[in-house]
Amino acid sequence: MTAPVTRHDWTPSEVLGLLRQPFNDLLFQAQNVHRQHFDANRVQVSTLLSIKTGACPEDCKYCPQSGHYNTGLDKEKLMQVQKVLDEAAAAKAIGATRFCMGAAWKHPSDKDMPYVLQMVRGVRELGLETCMTLGKLTQEQTAALADAGLDYYNHNLDTSPEFYGNIITTRTYSERLQTLSYVRDAGMKICSGGILGMGESLEDRAGLLIQLANLPEHPESVPINMLVKVAGTPLENAEDVDPFDFIRMLAVARIMMPRSHVRLSAGREQMSEQTQALAFLAGANSIFYGDRLLTTANPQADKDMRLFQRLGIKPEERQEHDDEVHQAAIEQALIEQRDSALFTNAAAG
Image 1 (cartoon, rainbow, N blue to C red):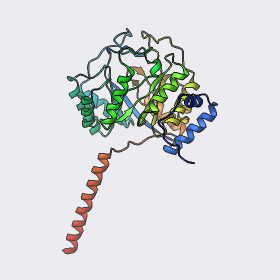
Image 2 (image 1 turned 90 degrees about the vertical axis):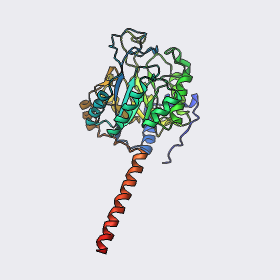
Image 3 (image 1 turned 120 degrees about the horizontal axis):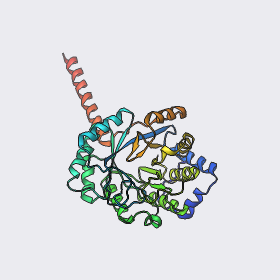
Image 4 (image 1 turned 60 degrees about the vertical axis):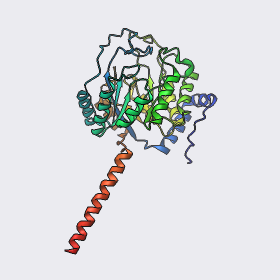
């Protein structure tokens, strides 16, 4: 079967056509695309830690960390570097290959950046991939994160440009796209997706996927979140998302961005095991793993592993960084030179 061409010119009519396909036809198409680019029985596993919680100045209507709403969330300052590294080591011990750190900021301050950079270096030294979500970045901050070795930067678009103003008014869509552009230009990988269940239309869901897929390069990671309704936020009484509609979104994301990891993200705690299995069939191949997802519950690690075992799924092994591969090649060459010298000396003796 010929691999699909990676495209950056999707139109609304095309994407709506995919979303409206008969369910079985859509899943069959998505699974075929998935198998051409990934091992269908491997899922990438990440752990997410909130390194600074609450009192965020943004007014995102879904977020319990927004300082605009009273959700009863305890506010915490930026975590100490060593505490973050301890959490990363624990995540690695239970099988995570990527450690994601999230801070409830509009943007990081100059005062906090040195600590953030220490966290990136320290987590990387543990042998984990690194990811951060810190809000809006300047070009200088982006370069500093890249120099520290940050692998991924998460900055979700959340929804379509047309619906965005109904959810957030303190940051523009163009600012989000600018941050993604800075991240890409600095050589880091992008993690960017959105949220279902905020009152958006089918056209808005298509619009979100078009924004992501029509970027100059597809995000390496595309988290698709189901809204976790939190009391005190404006969306606490939002209508539930139909599980089949959620699976459709995952499948279309897989078809449109065939080489990206599509992450089954927030809302997994509310999903049945059968829904999660359908998600993997639709092409989702990344999850958050551990007891919490920033400030909301997430299925416990042992429960995830039991589901993996029942489905015959194994965690994806960590991909080595290009510089690590290069360093390993240098070390191997030095070993071969040494062994050759020893052999020559022995033969000469």
